[in-house]
Image (tube, rainbow, N blue to C red; front, side, top):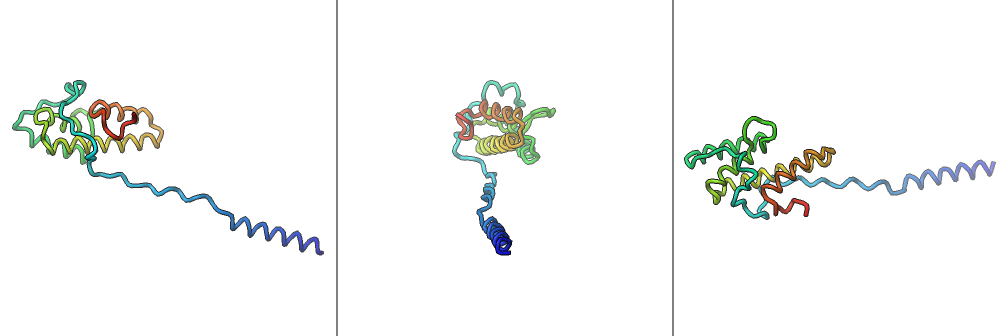
Length: 152
């Protein structure tokens, strides 16, 4: 009987020690991405040559309307032309930059579009869509090759 009590006591002791063992560390808390445009990257002053053919032609008197279209496209998540029939937010903002390089609203729009594209690329990486992640990197590198979020 002593052996039985010793065995039961030993099992109870092991079970209680197992319950006290450290569990897995809690998952890290995800940091919400900033929706504010990054000010760390310099503004785009010259539209890259490979983007010239993608940009709609904008007359100086159409600048405000084009910025409105760009803001709406950005709000809808139409960041770049992709497979859509018309230009995305990035192309529209760059079209304004092409005629007015110092336009702060267009510069902020380019930054916001790139930030949204980077977030899309991060999501693509996490979900294993490497083709989309590569596409995002190609766009960002062509528009702003010195952006801080681009790999070296």
